[in-house]
Image (cartoon, rainbow, N blue to C red; front, side, top):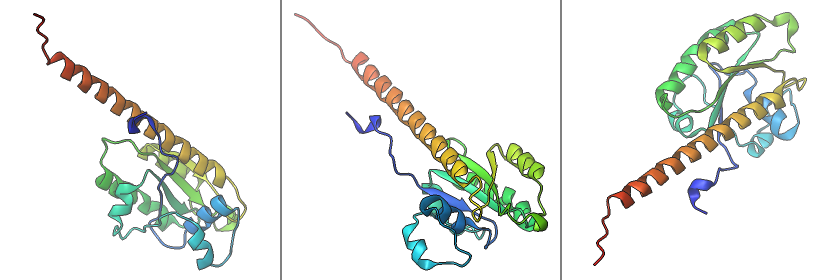
Length: 187
């Protein structure tokens, strides 16, 4: 079979946050290792293969190469929430709009009930405006972490399969076109 028939099983995911300390490392650690740590552990970081650009937008290479994105804000930070549209715009600016790639908006730290500053409804409305799916999670309590990642991975797989199918159609059309350009003379 040709390379066009294979869909990769390894994906690059960028967890993107407008501010530091929103829990993106905790989310990826919870998903990959089923673990949560109150403090940053660099040993766990070596085991997790995710990318974590922040809003300084210096990581365009990671954004360009990513297969999918989690845009993460903590529900206890209105500032981070209000910066999400700029992060989304930056991703679109780097990636463009012609190639499909999934983006999921994630409101993290839902375990901090008494500190909540962003409602679920506000998160849903922003996700609708941005044209992406929405989850609220708690890495600490393991709420919706697996669901958010599995949804993203499923969406990535669908995008990749669609890209492979499109390439196969283009390849078939190119082959048919090249045969139609040839002439045959029988003597």
